[in-house]
Image (tube, rainbow, N blue to C red; front, side, top):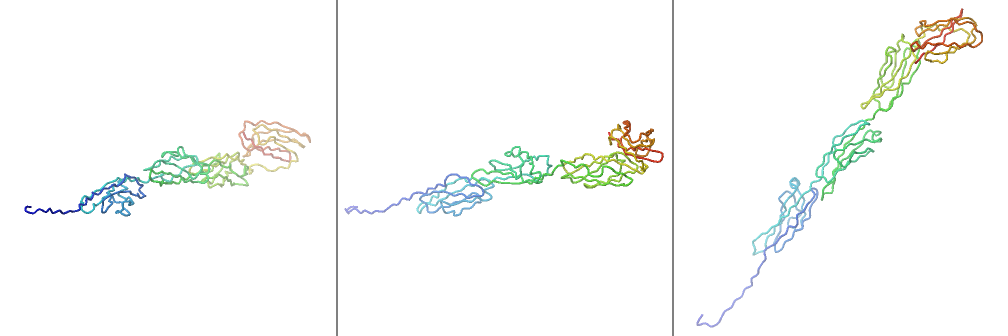
Length: 377
């Protein structure tokens, strides 16, 4: 100012600091059992910090390249919001932040169903349950086949080896959705009970003289049978003791004729009846068993259907020919004359008689000869 005439000048340096910038990166997806690498970026900052809206964890929340591991709450919510916050350099006061959405893909789950039991001639309806899957597949440790192995509801048909083994393991696999890589597998055990395909015809005597053998034993075999039920027809022939594959019958001493024994093999899946064993039941106590006549006698055929021939040779005297039933009652008689050493054939027709055991009795003056004959239609 006047009267001074000299100017005075002073200088200062002004530094301009930029506000911070931040980029949390692109939204991402992670599998629930995996961790996600983060790629944040920032400038003009003094510090950074990652935070989550959920309960996951960072390996180093102060690193731009932190690794995030989802927590249980994150998995339940299927996502978490991750925020990258940066603090400014000194002289600046504005804190900035950026978010990304971390989607969380659940692992697949699979339930094949309960263990099951079927018979060897049956199939199994499968109805599995899966979640968070991209696709499914049924598989077997045996040799059976599926109606459609890629459908949750399908039918399994056991193979021959499954039936032989008696059981087979069936698995349901649920394949994951990306980015998950672990599939879910659940198994059920299928028990295959065998079916009875064959029953052996009863094995035992097919001729019984109840005078000498009041009780007889019979047996059978049937693979896979767990129980047996025995039958005799007619029931008046005797009393059967039901048991396992071996039984005994106490014969009715008053019964004579043909009886039929058969057996039913049983298990939890099915039953099957055997063919019948034909048994000729006799009781010689009522028949005179003296046979001292020196002749050759044949009944042809024997057994027969009531039509037969009686061939004789060596008959040296006239005889009375009697036909007796099994109880000893006379059903026919006729006289046969002497014809020496020549063979003679006599035709008989008793087709009107019921089937059973009969006796041809040749009675001479001092001698008797008896031949047994069976009529069986």
